[in-house]
Image (cartoon, rainbow, N blue to C red):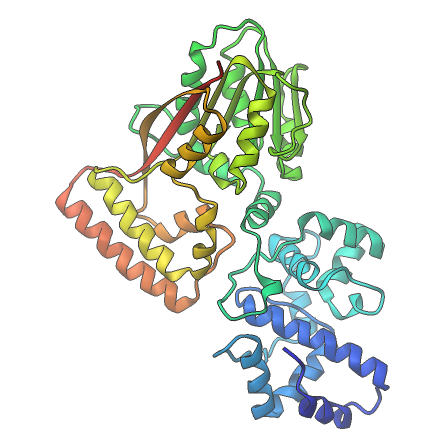
Amino acid sequence: MQFPSSLRKHLIGKLPQLDAAELDLAIAEFHKFMILSLNSPRFFFPCSMLIDQIWHESIVETREYAALCDSICPGSFLHHTGMAHSEWMQSRSINDQDSEDLSVLASYYSNFGPFDSATVHHWVVATDIMKLKQWNLNQLNSFLKQISQFPCKTRKNIHSDLQPKIEDLIQHFHQLHPGECETFFSNLPTTVPGMSSYDILANCIDIITTENPVILEVGCGIGSMARKISNRFNSMKYFGIDQSESEIELARRRLFGPETDFTVADAKNLPFKDEFFDLIISHMSIHLIKDHEGLFSELKRVIKPNGHLYFTIPGQPGDEPGDKAYSSILSLFNELNESLKQTSSIYRNETDLLKYLQSNFGSFAVRKSSYQINLELSGNPLRHFELLYPYLTLNDTQKNHFKLHSEKILFDFKLNHPGKPITRTMVVYQAIRD
């Protein structure tokens, strides 16, 4: 994706005030702007007046500009926005940097590396957040290193450097929206009256008779499961790990006892000694970890003999009409999101995951139970899937297509099965170490 030499020659004539080095730098940042904008159509990337001028001058050279767009993202054309920099500033409050601002910065860092003193001034969001936080350049880059991912839909033919790591994108969402998924699952009823999926998992561990058990939760989020299980033991030592610093920080602020500890950690590299835990639990997290072999090997290492492992994951669709209707809507959403094809190696179904569990824990006795989560999709089914796959986007045409066909599926389901809920299978796995 080289910048066209003919377009560069045109810009030399239009920007005589810049020397060669200044022009090359500005063109390089404009090229980055084009790459990010064409592959992230839902985000607005506010840039310096000079980059905007280069954009305006480039688009006048229609043939060369169209070829540049096509070389970055085949079939695309980025139209020049009429919004001036001052208008953009007035339309936003920089007192509360939102997730879009952070996504813009993280996209740049992930794809092009850290900002330097020459490049940072071309990116308005970067200079704004530095002013807001009173950061220097090193502090900005250090922050971006923690959250950097490419949180937008990627397309088939873009540069390989822009391909996202799905686990990173999930972590990015939780970093920016701590507790949103937990609120989502807490408010979804199940076919067990009065119980959420958190309640079901908490009930499963009632058979634990160990006094003062030492418990680990993988993917603890803001501590929803910790709250559920803290009432089930007179005394316990609880350790929760998560890779989202913002969710761990929120969990620490909640009123838990002194025997509760929340830590930012990787489940495949746990900071605990061998045979330390009586119980390990995880709610809707384990299926999102790509390296299941490394994960289960590490969990086995830290579980005591006769220790228990309980976790929930989405199960294979059942034969209930509500399950089949959900599967039809999910298939429709999958077809529209090319990026979902990249997640196939991460979103393990229960058959695949059981294979990994048994291959690593042959001595474990494994059993599973299935439950149904009731999904209220009649209001806005698209919002449901945007929460489950927060790093993906649909354009307006795709949204309209999804809305039309998903509403048709829902209408037919309600007509043929009045009073029945749309459901999704949840599986609870139990493993006991011998």
